Length: 268
Ligand SMILES: Nc1ncnc2c1ncn2[C@@H]1O[C@H](COP(=O)(O)OP(=O)(O)OP(=O)(O)O)[C@@H](O)[C@H]1O
Image (cartoon, rainbow, N blue to C red; front, side, top):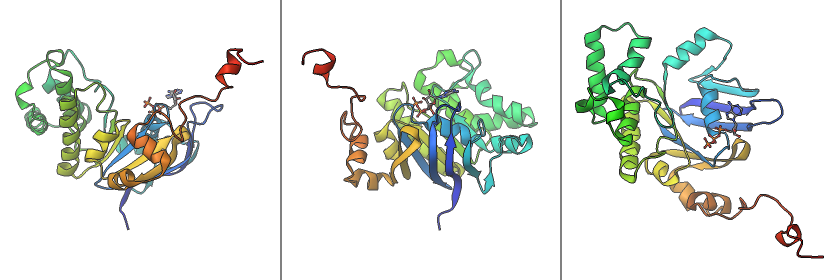
């Protein structure tokens, strides 16, 4: 029996009543694993992370976090839950005029009463884990984008979260920085014993580090799920189109439209 840490159980959600973003979606994330959630723009990946973090409530269905149904009305439960998760947003969202050190120290100062000497040791250890202990005194606007992403990783793990959620961690990075970031996500998961969810549209990078992956399409519909090896070996045309990034296939390139000739008035 797999040890499920997060379960999305027949969840539907819309930001307003007129449009469902997630339509009866079910996913399960195993404890200790890195699971990738892949899908095109707008299919609801970030929305899914927000529901897990209790930012929004599911309209229908349940989000279960380590055996407990997430209830956004229960403020005490939400606070405890948020202490258990670390989140890395697209572009890191660091304080650009603070130092690398102060950025990583920030969640420790916000959420704990630890003495300054201990905060210092934790920050230096987290920075060491991402290879940036030597950069501690630099300001964010003095370091490269790839380094900044690593600082954001160190900050996301500052409180030793049990769940790490990464939203598009590879965006805007050059290939080397991308590889470094991917390896760090894997290493931080394994050394801290956390569970990691990785939202991205970068199939290659995700498959290089994920234990398992879900492929989603519009409405959060699960096209397929499995280990990267299983998905790569799939002969389902929709999965192949997805993985190879083919522009046309079961997911058509063209939005439904009348024939071009008709639209251009070329036919009587
Ligand atoms: N706060 C919001 N209010 C209203 N609609 C929203 C909000 N956030 C997202 N949406 C809409 O919900 C849909 C899904 O967005 P979401 O960000 O979850 O998709 P995504 O798969 O993460 O896409 P991307 O890869 O582009 O980030 C989109 O159509 C988006 O416009």
